[in-house]
Image (cartoon, rainbow, N blue to C red):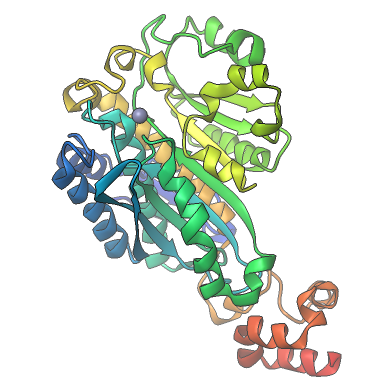
Amino acid sequence: MALERSKNGVLLKCNDSSFFEGISVEAADLDYIESSIKKYFSDTRHHAIHNRYKMAARDYVYKEFSSFGLVAEYFEFSLPPVSTKSNFTTVIGMLKGSHFGTAYDKMIAIGAHYDTVNTTKGVDDNGSGVVTMLEVARQITTMNRKGTKRKNTIMFAAFDLKEENCKGSELLLDSWLEPWLFKNYGQAAELLESHGVFILDSVMNYNVSIKSQTSLPNMKSLFPETFSSISKDNYKGDFLAMVYRNPTSDLVLANMFKAKWKEANREQFELETFPLPFEEYSELPEKQQLNYRYFMKSDHASFWDYEVPAIYLTDTYNYRGVMAACYHRPCDDASMILSDDNLKFLGKTADVLTMTINQLSDPYQGTTVASFQIDGKSPDSPDVIHELQESVLVRNLASVLRVGSEYYQAHKLYHGLLTEMF
Ligand SMILES: [Zn+2]
């Protein structure tokens, strides 16, 4: 068990034996979060109004990703219906796991949009989401620098053009992702599964006043348990809302996030769940679609379209406190939103996401032996041999040699196993 102090002096507990599963964090660096918001996310980020400021925010995300040790990339695109003059950019940062490039890689992603509408300063919507994502990247890569390695690849993304019908995330999936996967995973791309993605959109507006939370559309009939919990709490806007599709693998991520939220203490910051009862929004009858429309209004919906599990985290923006008057207006600014309580609320979300993503990435301590384990087992264990015999990959020697070359070349036992099998 190692005990360390994080930069801002709060105790950070890391449990070596369970690969950091027990980070009981208050690790979020609130000074970093605050200064990032003030410098880069406290004014309009719209291509037609304040493109220079928007570009500065974009470049800041890229620079931060790079300085954390992520492989940073711009995905630039044009969208003439939105503008014939400006180009748009989604910023991507990859933390490659040891399974990168193989069919074993089970990616996890976290994303937030950095653009704004042309009438707001966009501190809550969605500077708050971007800085939370950056803080998670900082925490995760700090662990890596201290010796943690990860099997699964983690993708961080700052989307453009969410405020134009989520076009940024939609185009990332339509145009960027597949070529990128085939370039880096070859044929194995077709076998890849992913854990899913966490989307942050407006996550800082915390309010403990009675009746600061108004009811979300159809909340009483669609989510009776959540409604009763919020009404018993006198309609305080003191929670993070988590939206997911109940009958899908979203539930795995949602349950893990919920458990970590409990572990992270700080009970004054609550979590309320909004489990949607469908898998495919587009297959609902039209009237039902209208009922649930509010819950489809961010970048998570683009991932659902591609059957990628996705969780949507939000403070419910215009349904709470100052954002009721400031949503998409100039007063969504630092003077209204950047309070100590709001920063701490955001900090808990960042910590819980770090804990969740850390676990999903399948972390291990970087030793030679561990790096040649397959799903936590030694390559010559009966389980792994069985798994390999069952595997689609083993039916194709060429794939095994390519996909498994990392293990193949480096481990004589594994080499022996393959020779025996063929
Ligand atoms: Zn917005």
